[in-house]
Amino acid sequence: LARHLGRVTDAVEDALQNDALDRASLTLVNGYAPNIAATWMFQKSFVHPVSSQRPASFVNRLMRQNYVNMEDLGDDVLRPFNQDVVQPRALLQVLGLATLRDPLNILPLCYWIGPQELVEWLGHFGMMLLYDGAHHVLGKRVRAYSH
Figure 1 (spheres, rainbow, N blue to C red):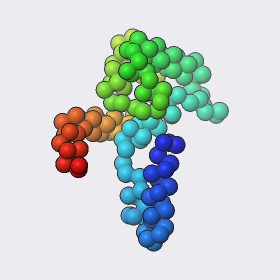
Figure 2: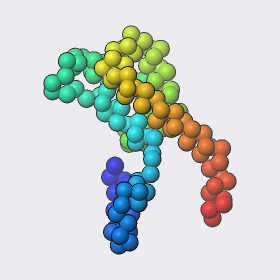
Figure 3: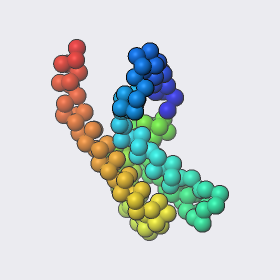
Figure 4: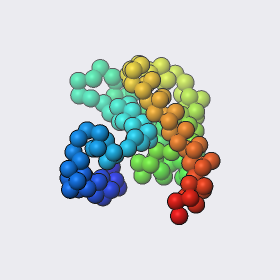
């Protein structure tokens, strides 16, 4: 989040100077970023609330398995995750490997996260894949056009 602070600060300053403080104007400060939205699901699944009935061993198992998977998939997967840069193709690899290696953890994960949040996350993950695909298909053309 801190890496966006300069951009967001400049945008809020511009909004204040131009009296653009209505809801529609302020939504332009920080556009939709599916990777940030999807990151909230990680926070939800990796945290153990004080009043939760979720066993702490569940969170530990989930964290351990995901980090083992990322290490096994290599630095190209592990480093961006540790830098809080969620990449959809790397995430797809980690989730696929987690499903293969620990399929019995999928149902408890779905239970503890909840169906609504899971469906919402799948939507954000789908958008991540769409954005990633568009970037790889159109990225060079858009950058060439903008220069």
